Image 1 (spheres, rainbow, N blue to C red):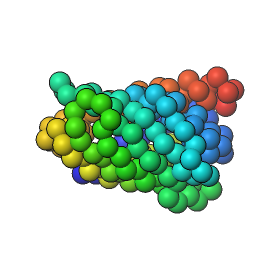
Image 2 (spheres, rainbow, N blue to C red):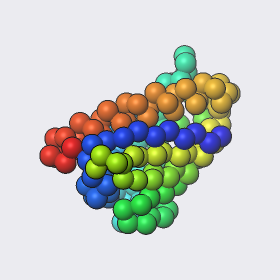
Image 3 (cartoon, rainbow, N blue to C red):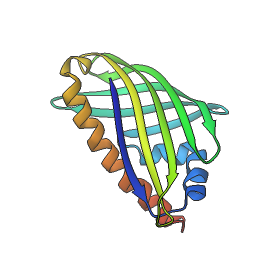
Image 4 (cartoon, rainbow, N blue to C red):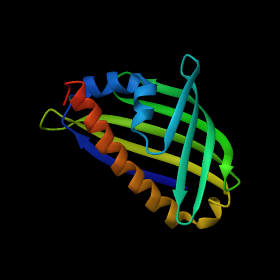
Length: 153
């Protein structure tokens, strides 16, 4: 299933790019992430809990930066399985595109190709897409707050 969401931040693209280069900082903006361990350059172990409808699960994922073009985009590949809650597995390929806005800010576009198996996967595309939109809104708000705290927004 593919999901795409976008939002704008008041920070310049170069500032947003620098923020995204620190994946641990970005992960703190993702709803449900409780831990990020650096395994190697561009490779991380992420623990995240999510609830979709009445089903919840905590996943342990291995995430790596799969591709990047400085200032333009980053791609991440993640694979993992649940370690608590509903039994399931998750695989995703995520791309973050950065584009300047006419006001000096940045349009951030998140595109994810997600495959969810197990109980969460059984909920269907609509429930997962709605959860994706909700997570993007929360991520955007947290990103704006982090950029503001860093003095870049």
